[in-house]
Image 1 (cartoon, rainbow, N blue to C red):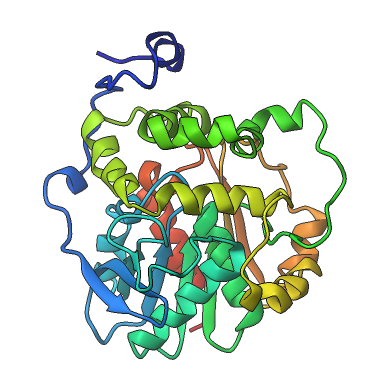
Image 2 (cartoon, helix red, strand yellow):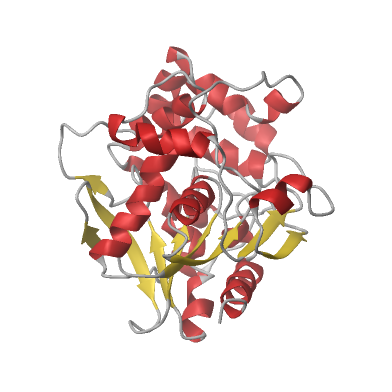
Length: 332
């Protein structure tokens, strides 16, 4: 039985409800790739690896609320083409853990990007490509903007999302603010308590809201939702959105980095932009925008993928893999 979003709301996200939403079941629910762990200075980072160890590495970065399984359909295509696909669990998700109990559970954009650089160092990878959406897309852009010598190519499943977290911007008036209700909700104590109590239910609502035409299966969601049991998940999610809303401080070690990012630097790396035509955060402009031309001086391609929403790697793995291969070919 398929339950619409309104049915989820009506029956209550906090009731431990099992929700079947369509019949599509990906291979990830049958034979997930084993998890590997790499230790950095701050984290034990979990990841799935596919393809030859000698292949050129591509870091695959998920968003909120998702995990590395987002790329279960993408990684085999990259591996088959001879690339080393590394699907990463971001801080606060799945098996990724902080090493020190005293480390603040923060997840600002500078920290997420540094985690990727640290992971590359731990794996002794000097140069790599990145592909990401949502949190992962922003982390990839920051990593590329600050380390262009190390990042060969970028696939960003959205537009330019590096943010000024130092100086509050102009107010976001309705209807735009209605599309981004959860950062506002998480800025309240009630929102934090609710997320801590019924986070998995709320996260499933985001899947409905952000990818309204995606008929995912219960098994697909549950495989990913296991990552939300990470003990740092709530703290990292709440901090990420509160920091981006200028109501929570970031880590002191990233203050100067965030000041650089506040200038919204260019991503001077060959880039492919992919947009879901049904993304619940809003449809992209039909043509390349002035901001995209300015911020992506080495734009390789830009496409709107119809029949997909916010969670592009889940929904259209072949198209995402093609974009990654296109970005790498452009730099060969």
